[in-house]
Length: 614
Image 1 (cartoon, rainbow, N blue to C red):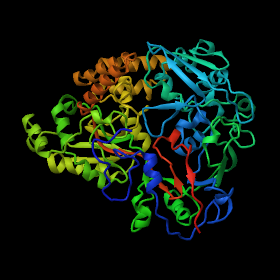
Image 2 (cartoon, rainbow, N blue to C red):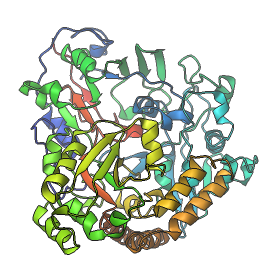
Image 3 (cartoon, one colour):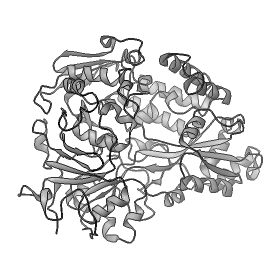
Image 4 (tube, rainbow, N blue to C red):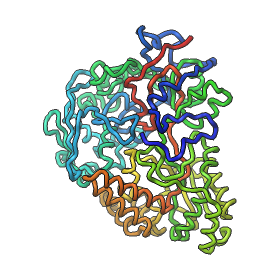
């Protein structure tokens, strides 16, 4: 487990980090959640205290974990990436991919359906050896099941199912390096045998890539195998309990839309003996954290993910403060520069650096709980984060930089606008800091989501000058992804305004259908690379070197770290806060490590439950 370059910060004193420099998160959680909640009147989906399934089975502990979350809008993994985390979290219990995440080390992957795997020295071939395992109906699970599942996920006909969400793999083909897969997805080929995914025997699955992809193993975590016969027989609702055939530890056994769901430990799951929790009761609560807290205080549920500011839930309740737990910090929030006709911000590195130096990130954290100060581009729970230096708060140096560039006290710099899609105190506070410390008039514009998206991708007012709110949590959650992913995937902040508007026209605007998806992506890549500034090209070159060094992991990590530092030093992105999920967790839960990965929010292996009190 990596340690933070700065302590986990919690200005309100209410949020407990799940990791420390010398204590594992599993040990910490097992020993620290010791305070009982004081109940309040309420109603919920679970059993009354001291009764029902929560205490069934006798012997050590109990067997039912009672949870709550907002109702999902679908449970088809093919559409999982486009909905809320609620569905993704549930689906991760029902299915399992080739590999799974290690809750205690974001840089490590553990065997799932595949008991082993290896990559060729050039990084172009991955071979997975599947274990002897079955679907929950007893059918053997084979390598050919994965081949068919990939053909389903990437089928260009998937949108014909009329799901309210776009397919989860939309956009992914532009990034995937699996041979032939983008052409299949784009409809240029309807022969999936041309794709580099092959079952060489029942237990061997081979992937062929066109170039090394440091995120490939991570992608296999959430590409679940699907049971072809049951899916084709029930295209729209194969995931419903009476039709479901899955391979994960907790199949869905009961489901009532907007009410709740039950999942029970599968007798056929290959690692079932590692689990003591045999049932999970999920309460669907559309009223969010406030409603879930009623059930939590009434001792009807054991845990829920807090959506929004958790401080109000425990305000004035010291007995609950220890039960508010933070998952891994894997997301950074901040602003990114947008192109504009006025090129001052694009062309002047010292002006952008001055804006970063004028941000007091500790102060921003006090108005944005549960987020914490984010003094670098790479959050502290990302493996390798310590190698990226922290950004300073130094308004005097910021003023001096502006003066050296001919802008004393901000004179000559036009008013800056920050666009966003929702009211965010951190942005208002940052705007005030730029005005106070630098003399640059700054405002925040809250736009309708569609308008925000259009402006983000180039369709801005003629006189726009400034930034947009943005956030990122790339996976895999290591420095390799922060410093060694294809550079065009980050942002186009260094591109001239006229080029940015052309990119908008061919990707989202009136020329959107002029070219095929593959041709459009190639054009975007061409225009992007041709217009990078020297400082952004430095990052891109290091980035490419890191990916090319696949055969030498130590060298690849070194180059990726240099790339991440180079990107941070462009100041096209200005990080402000680090973020992760927050959870309320009862003291009866022992050994649970909550993470901030929606597709693996926690692993119940080895987790135990004390009897319900009362």
